[in-house]
Length: 250
Image 1 (cartoon, helix red, strand yellow):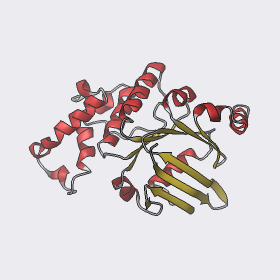
Image 2 (image 1 turned 60 degrees about the vertical axis):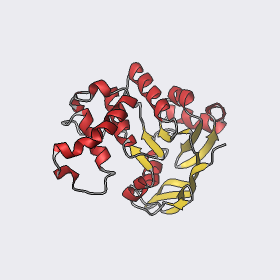
Image 3 (image 1 turned 60 degrees about the horizontal axis):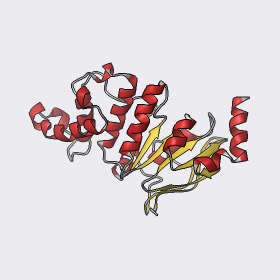
Image 4 (image 1 turned 90 degrees about the vertical axis):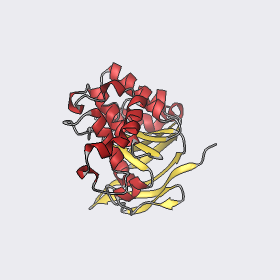
């Protein structure tokens, strides 16, 4: 069995008197696809923000393997291999698909001045960029303006730019949000494909996607973990049933 790659203990985030995340414990097993689910306002996105350093924890500890990362900056956490994509697409719409991936690859280079280099000097990155695009079935779209891509392809491009940073753990925030059935199926298969040899933690509202894709599920409600296990296990948990029924009838 693979070991734990992310270990979270008593993670708490308060905004004044409001406690958004309250004593969360979480273990992410290396090589698995792990979903974080729960009703709206459960604290899922806040947990993502804490894991990636975009929000500081109020208390508690986050470890990536044996290293404590709570308290590090977003850049420091990303350099250690925990990289996030966002629910709202963060691509550069006026540049080509290939350029978007190349921009992401440039972030791993030792100098910050690549944007001032000639086009010719940056073409060494094109082979790696094209390999990523082929992995995400976007090779034929490489010369397309990113803003002109169909919605599902934009999300695939976002995943490609995230993979350019060579993450150990890939965090996906609502990867199928706003998609029709065809795009949901396509992106689900892409996630399954890129998860090979990687660890994925995802926030996802589409429960059939979670059921078909994820090895393990953690359920949040009101900022606390109420269940964790396989999809079959958590779906039968009375606290989970009550949390979702309560959300539906609120």
